[in-house]
Length: 234
Length: 234
Image: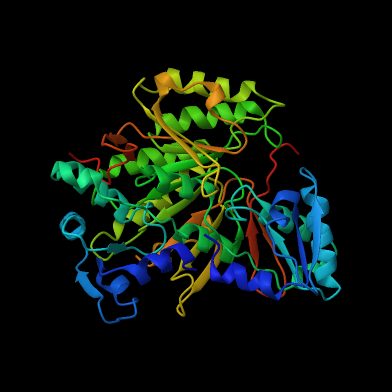
């Protein structure tokens, strides 16, 4: 699913910077330096990339999915704003990609075919109260929802609370989709309902999609299909 | 920006079905039949594609951007559900793509780097009151927002009302981005504020992005950069 634009940037790079598992997907070659960094050091990673670019390197910061959606693009621009004035005039381009919710939605059918919202459920960088407020307003707006980072070992209780809030705000038959490791050999897709959803269905490699009140499931011989109709007029 | 998966499907197709301007982007070749259809006939187009697939053709229904976001995937599944039972067991795959808001966001910086919502402003298929409700709730949730189909000649007043609602709910300095025909030779990007936004800045080829209250603009020698920080804690 990598676009030709992104592949061309990788092919022209002198340096690749990113979180370890993403950098390991890049094919090594002469003249290319791979800089693997740990999770949760986004600002240091961004500043390192900008410093190398400032020194004349052709640097590619890799993310999975789309770098602009809960990934490195914001961190790079935060570092630009905080850094030396000369960094502002570097030739920085964000190359869009297939973000996880789009890959998950495509695998399940078309659950994001009508208005929707996208929420990062990690409370590392925002207070839980804001997440809860957004969940309630999103349900009131009858948006379909896509959740990134639904659950980690260090904060297993957040997704349990998310399910509780959805149960308060939505009907039990609401369509829910757990899409794990989409587009990898480990891909696993579970199309279920809010009433049947349990916290352990999600982990950090899972994108969770919640239908709007109109999202439907087509049963058939193989895996069911979930989609949201385009119209709310009927 | 076409993924290798999508290109491979086009290369293997016997029939391409879609709205005229999208089908015209496909290179003709022997053995490939191009079926161009007009706008607003999505259900007939979908049923035609499914009937041909049922007859053994390898059919590709083309959209721009991502077929799952306000495009043909939902229409195809609506037609599957309404059609003969045998259509349910066709091998139908949705191939995700770079939807317009991701291309627009990448061109502008990283305005969708935090929680956001995506709203189709066309009231062809939903009542205007629902659009207005969603706009107000999205502002209350402090989502960044992406608007598809903001304005057409047949309904120029909708986007004017959208700006009025945003003006009621958001501060005048709120970042707004008008991204027209992104990734085409006609690409035009306008990063401005709510106070300076006017209805004529949008047309049907424009994606409009509205920042959250935290979205910032980095001024520099070239075009400014708009981004939303990852954190709301500071």
